[in-house]
Length: 278
Image 1 (cartoon, rainbow, N blue to C red):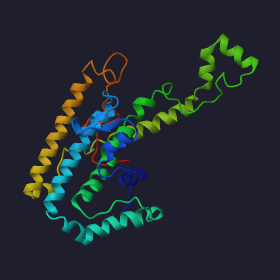
Image 2: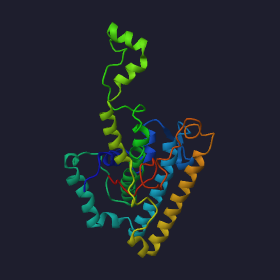
Image 3: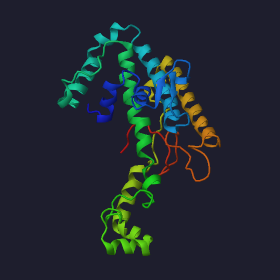
Image 4: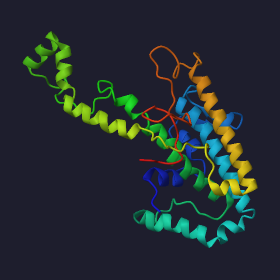
């Protein structure tokens, strides 16, 4: 099994708390047991952190229920040969070039397994959605995020002629610098594909897998997970309409929807699939 570099980067760095520890390591939060999620955000109105922590907590609670159901005793984790073989393959085959690194987590206890599985689910669902499905909205209008500059900017050692052209018609200098129509449309097409949800996309917390339905305890746990996801969706919609949250609502601002769990098909700028789908 091969995991993305993002997954194993978080596996070794974040000690069973991938997103919370990521925020702490980047100086965006500090530990505070009196605050929701056990964190005090450096920037309280930080949409990625606010929405991401809701999803992280939901994922971890669901994984905790799942693991505790099938491994009621800690010794069962270490003695499960198939589980240990899975973890061994990830480290030594999927990432053979990194197999001897000292930072790989051990897989001996409930917490080890919960942390590893939660991190894999988070990175391939929420984190990927936050960086992927907004690409077209952000850069599809190429003046907002041009992918190439065909000329130097005038303040980069301009000739007298270039400087005079800029002074006379600055908009002409800008248009000359922008990508060509061919370059721009190529990038727009690629970003559209990257940001598009399929018509049969499966979103996190929506449809339970067959085995989840067959096991009564797991069915209950998944229903609880589904309700947390639905509540998260309602919270995001409410926050995006809150004019006091200036980083996600107001004139000229695009509502932060990247971690809104469900979506219609197409490049919507929202929706969190069960896993990476492109």
